Length: 230
Image (cartoon, rainbow, N blue to C red; front, side, top):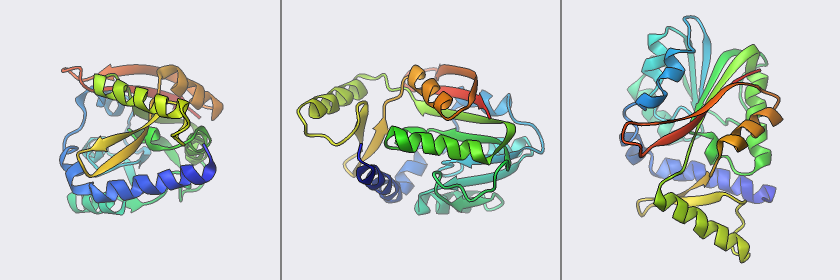
């Protein structure tokens, strides 16, 4: 993917989330129970934590319960406004995950829940992970999830964009797609496999501790998760 198009996609994604911020936040009031173990099992009191791509701050109560020093950032101005209004005691900032405003070796753990699949191009995804690595303390942990697409409508979309790519009518990379949010927008996604996520983390020089797939009770929502050490 050309750098200019990837940068345009990043800007589009920010504008998309600004435009759907209220609707999106209403669908993200609760935490996803199937990934709560990532907070329960890995946090300890006093940890300095970054919630990267924090959205409306819905995971803040889990961090607060563990008595950590919390920082939450997101690149959507509208969504950060919602987070600040919901949890005024938290430290939320409107920032860019590709250029973190924190010094080296600053955080004990960095969480990135359902964010990496919105980063276009392998080059920028590696930059994102390397920036996380820079901000982590030695032996610090990256705890990250991406969606695992599996439903028929998602597979149908992927096939659509594969065909468009084959006939030269898509500037997206392979396994990229736009998914509609109602009739308002189409959000950019990259379709990750577990193997690809692991390979990407290794390319950013992380040491993989654990990688797996979790799903909710209904089975309609699945996520790939990775625990990686600096």
